[in-house]
Amino acid sequence: MPHPFATRVGVRRLVTAAIAAPSVHNTQPWFFRLDGSAAVLELHADPDRALPVIDPHGRALHISCGAALFNLRLAIRVTGHRPLVEPLPDPARRPTLLAAVRAEPAPMPSPSQSELYATIPHRRTNRRPFAKRRVPQVVRDELMAAAREEGAVLSLPGPQTTAYLLSLIAAADAKLVADPAYLAELARWTPDRTRGDGVPWYAFGPRPSGRGLPLRDFGPAAPSAGRDVDDFAARPQLAVLLTRGDGPADWLRAGQALQRVLLTAARRGVSSSLMTQLLDVRGSGRDEHRSHGHIQSIIRFGYGPVVPGTPRRPYPEVLERV
Ligand SMILES: Cc1cc2nc3c(=O)[nH]c(=O)nc-3n(C[C@H](O)[C@H](O)[C@H](O)COP(=O)(O)O)c2cc1C
Image (cartoon, rainbow, N blue to C red):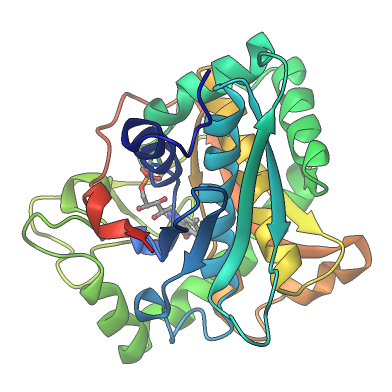
């Protein structure tokens, strides 16, 4: 197979896979740069797409870019090449450069790598209520293994810890929705007309009633505008993604682990959505778990209805050729 960076079609396929990744508020805070020799594909953070209110240090931005990096690695792998990733190669002089990626010939990918790649366009955040059916142990084991392979830990709390976590998330959410700066930032990323980014109204799901799961409400400013209200009553399968450290390299790792976990779930027909309000509020209890690692994400797994995908910016907008 030709080198994956050598042709326009090849590069387009890679970048299209990368940008299908989840990102906080669908900000898609990334761009890609291909150097003239077509040897290095760079993944950059786009600081204009940062969220200064909920993400002043860029943690969620790095996690989002890490998820895109995981997709990019998979897309390279299925071309019969192996991705060689240098994370944060020059943070002092090139702070937006999050990863320099090269590719070298390798044996053909394993069936599981090919299947994960094929799942990329089908994974989506599902904010609908989930069925009562439990996620089987064999799948839960697979999800934990997926995080481990990327150097992170996925912890699946029992009922007591789940209840405690949900109470912390509910408290964090209440603080957020009382903050006009949070609401203004959310409003900027929930456009009322179709755009290539942001969370569109059709992806909001029902409005949480406040009696069950404290999902993030993407439409708090227009609560009664034709949206159902739901308790999200089914006991959720929560998962907490942790890393040992808590700096940019760990966030990038967490993003790759998150995406491997989410794709693994989607491949097994398991729906997911994130509930990360706890990470948006200082002093919200996130740091209580430091002995086990730093919480980087909180995920809800289960079985939901099919939901439509969200928009992405057109591919030429996110690729620079130099
Ligand atoms: C770091 C991060 C944090 C997120 N936090 C939340 C959240 O708290 N609630 C939620 O419903 N979705 C959350 N999401 C999901 C994004 O809103 C979603 O990925 C984006 O809207 C694109 O939609 P898609 O995942 O269906 O492609 C988060 C995603 C990332 C990467």
